[in-house]
Length: 456
Image 1: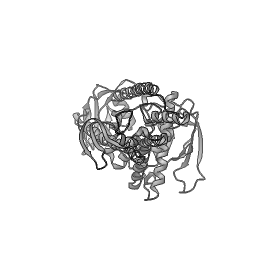
Image 2 (image 1 turned 90 degrees about the horizontal axis):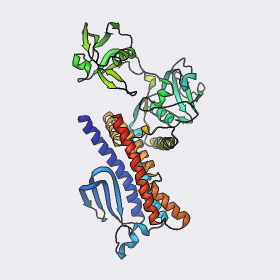
Image 3 (image 1 turned 30 degrees about the vertical axis):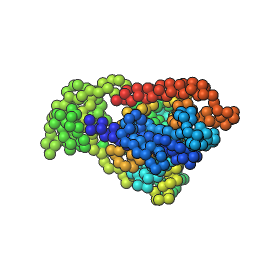
Image 4 (image 1 turned 45 degrees about the horizontal axis):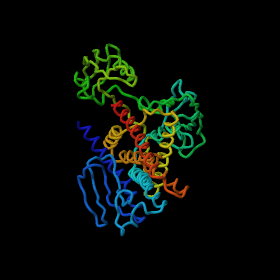
């Protein structure tokens, strides 16, 4: 329940900020174009707070935090007194209307830049993208790794951490080849002589984000510190915790088989759903044999697997693999600008790949996934929450630019037709377009919600 409330609260805060940014874009440009704004609302439905400003605009926070709107004076909607007709939206030139409508998505992109600027100004602790192996039967199998190698670039995009590698690879899903540039981790700083670019054949590369990351599916073996047999986490309501296993216990054996490594231990547990196993641990110099019955859960393939609710400790990350993505007051801006452009380009590519079928509609996410993402990022810290806000803000801006009549992009489509033809799109045509757009948007939202519940 606490997790649910935290996720819900984080979701409302995140969505409120992003909606406010989007609607303020419309509001600010509308005012500059001489349009009277009657209401600025964050949320829909019944108002829980309202105030009328000196400018005559009613500012509202409503009960349903799933959107917002800016109500402008418009003769097509209400009767407008003669003295106010020059302040009506419909009386403005087509280019002014284009500016007002496009200002919302543009505000989302600007907000993303600001959020990322703050994130890089504060500093983001990260891990260098270092590989120590490649997986057989994958596109990366052609790379022979004799020593730890750092991923320097994916295609033409330079990368600094695993998050950027993942983002860059996502943009290449469906491509026939992907170039990966590597360099030995031990190379001298500033030296590029040892860099080597590998062209990976990705014609048969398929990615299922529900099961794995693009990094692992393409076959890059991410370096990880050695896993130790000492337990760092034991869930209180997990099978191990209920059986008496504690944090700090050292794994010795399972069902008489001496502990070899963590993957083998996990393999035995997963194959023992609802079947009792004996786990031998060392605690305070004594060995204890504890009987545990792993609980069962359904994995990504729909099969039952055992789980006991424990996690091991691991050796610390080597200092030469840590990196602090932190920049100065001026240097943070171009970095934030570049990162925003990366997010925009990858998001556009992913929409294109959804249309071509290279990416499954199962990847669509709705409010539940966004709420979980908001809660998780807020739980980790401010810099990660800022990064999450930037990502969602970019996606919100792009989605609103889609040429669906109920979205900003649909209105812009009508206005650009007006620019070309010299006359407005007929009201009947617009009405039919709005109905079709609403149906398509409802369908997309239904798929996204279905995916959310499936993941739950």
